[in-house]
Length: 219
Length: 338
Figure 1 (cartoon, helix red, strand yellow):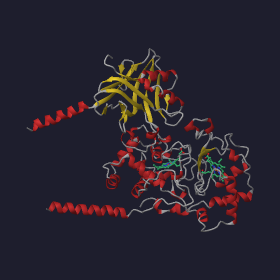
Figure 2 (cartoon, helix red, strand yellow):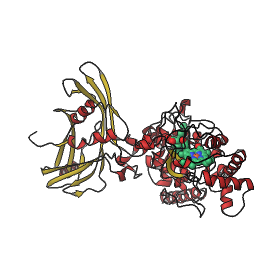
Figure 3 (tube, chains in turn yellow, orange):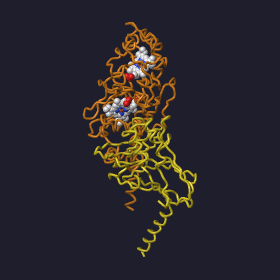
Figure 4 (cartoon, protein in one colour):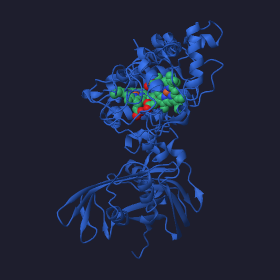
């Protein structure tokens, strides 16, 4: 009897979870899924080894309906998908990459915004929106550290970006994060160390939306 | 039956305990003279319990990696909560910073913090000293873990805040509640303004000189301005500190620093962002005599004739001394919690 009850409640939990919509973000380099601390080739000339990859996603809207207080920190060392309210037909899905100026100065230090996560920039207040740290290994045997802390909420160097995907979306939205766009741009322009807001952080941030690509079933 | 009795006894005792705790708290609302402007920082309802928790933390070296440095190590009450004697602050393992610790007073009237104004949130500010390698050199995660292993702080979190654990939010808000409560408004100048006393002839002459030559930036009654300016100091070759420029990256902000308050300046030596002047006399001499050796970002307001003769210098100094607030410097509510 007891076992039956247990099984019943367990399956209802599973059932409940399966009802939830979900956002999955999967980092890729070219056609390879990123595994932290593993070297992945980008071009013939160099490959990347990613040690840290973290970012804020916020202001999520499903079919233009905002999800109140949606602020998520994705940390690919301990990645979890984002659970969303169950929605049958998703035709449009949008979110911000990073945090808007209000969240930057909200003085709300709970949950994803807790400075304990290492995304708070104390010396000029506010959060890093997107953090990537790693090593570039060149075919010449040279190695260079790369560290990009993209953020800043003050004009004219605001860095928060918006992304919208449309179509007949399934209830699990899977997004491929094509990191090579960012890394190739950074290497080409020798942006190896961007640690504060300003022109370069602004410039690199404007690339971020193009990194987020909806994974369609064919892929 | 017996169980219930113990339960009731326990409840009574804890109510007494909590109220006793309350009774020991000094009620000290943030009070300021009527001729002061309204504070800029939202002060919410000032919460006495939070102030007292903030005070405990402010004086506790537990906040630094090796438990050797507290906030008070660099912000000493007797000198207006600044670091005395060091041009730039010294922190953990004797490491040197690059800037002079500012006085902590009347913070609620500041729009931004730090010499470059980079910090716009007083509560977020505290993360700087805690994590700075030359200050407390700790990481926030480690600190929160440590606080949660410290009986005193967990108990306070539970009784006063009804939270099971000691959170970052609690730490930062308590610290800023304490520092924002540091209000200095009982100087001789304030007594004169309130009509309780009058200035001596010398102080009065100094006051007039001040109004003519200094008040456009060090504006009454707080003797500061929420602006950045260059008072002409040449860049320090050791630190190459470009001030406000490091935040805005605008050339026009190069070598500009926050216009600091001159309240309690008698005791907040050394002076300027890098502590280059040891004595107030040196500062006055700098403004008065040093007209050729100034950087070319110097503010318009200082391009006028600032020359002061010997007597005028003494008068100005006498006036600056009227900004000292002895009650603030010894106020027991702000001192090491016993």
